Structures are given as structure tokens and as C-alpha cells.
Image (cartoon, rainbow, N blue to C red):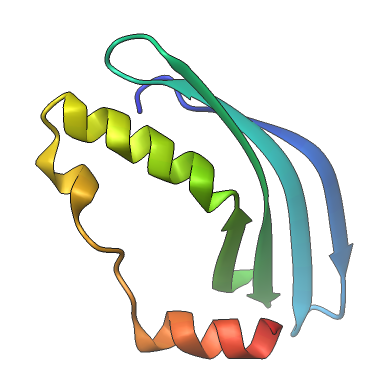
Length: 98
């Protein structure tokens, strides 16, 4: 994804310095190895305490990602068909946000 470009559409920040939440709405574009252009949109939710990022959650169109990864697999990138990395932190954060 050497040509991945993000455009920040909206930013919202609230909370005290020890529990700040920042939300960024974005769009992105990138192209695969054959030059096909993909575009997506999503939101990053960032929890910050005293200027340090404590967590980051990314919400985007996963169907778009499936199409992009399928294109990479066709190009011979075997890692593109690997299962997602799931950690206890991902599961904990998801439970907080739902």
C-alpha cells in the first residue's frame, strides 16, 4: 500500500486530560499492484491519557478490505489471505464500545 492516502473529514475531541477521546472520520484511497483504485471510509476512536495514546479502534467497511485483499492474493501476496490478528485487547475494547 505505498500510495495509501488518508483525508481527515471531521475531528471531535472531548474529555479531561486524563481521559480524552478523539474521533476522526476519514476517507482513504489506494491502488493495488495492477493499478486498480480502492476507496474506503471509516472512523478512528482514540483514547488518550496525559498525552499518551491508550487505545485505538478502527471502524471501516470490511467488505472493501475483502476486495482489496482478494486483489493482493491474485497478485501473489500470500499474507493477504491470513486470518485477522485477534487479541484480548481487541475483544476488551470491542465490548466497551458496543
